[in-house]
Image 1 (cartoon, rainbow, N blue to C red):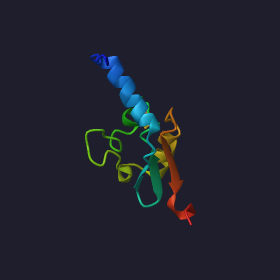
Image 2: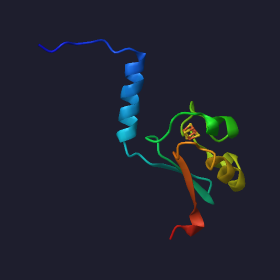
Image 3: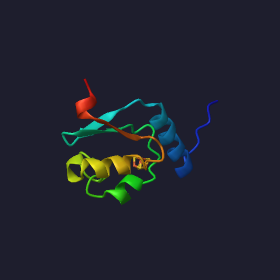
Image 4: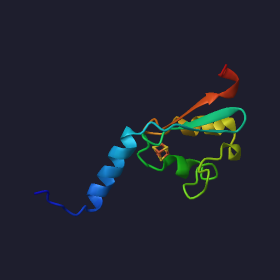
Length: 96
Ligand code: SF4
């Protein structure tokens, strides 16, 4: 007989993590010069992006990343601070 158990909050967090770790989603947001690449499956929700550039990263907005609200140099500096590698970027001029 299959026994059903209730999930507690930790189980739900683990399930979310497993789900996110296995997805391969890649999203891109550009300011015309630089494109921010975000891979939600890698994000550990440390919030460093939101704390560093709150005008760019707003989890309650859609889209949640608006790179037009920062300079390309500030975006580069901030993206290198992402601890998980969820954020990366490329220069639009380099994409051929
Ligand atoms: S800094 Fe990186 S890991 Fe942290 S919330 Fe932003 S995207 Fe996710």
